[in-house]
Length: 73
Image (cartoon, rainbow, N blue to C red; front, side, top):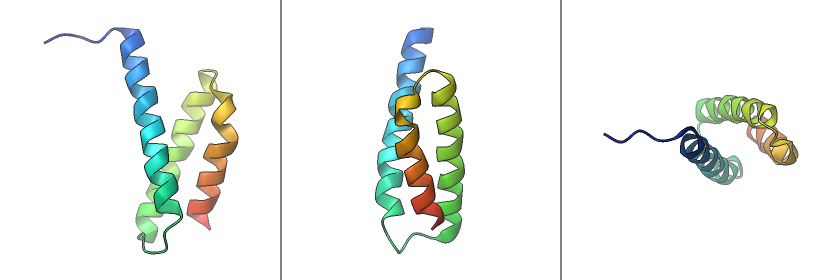
């Protein structure tokens, strides 16, 4: 089995995080999403935010925080 390079692994992780953010934004705008799912997604978005910001991707912080707020409210 081929092993991904560190660069490819980081690229995969970033694309996965941004994909999850798109789905989460869609779910946050719906009223029929289970509150437990909303809370769990909010926790994941918060964790993703911490990692992205630590890796220098602070340009997306406002969007992530807005999604977190929409999930919580």
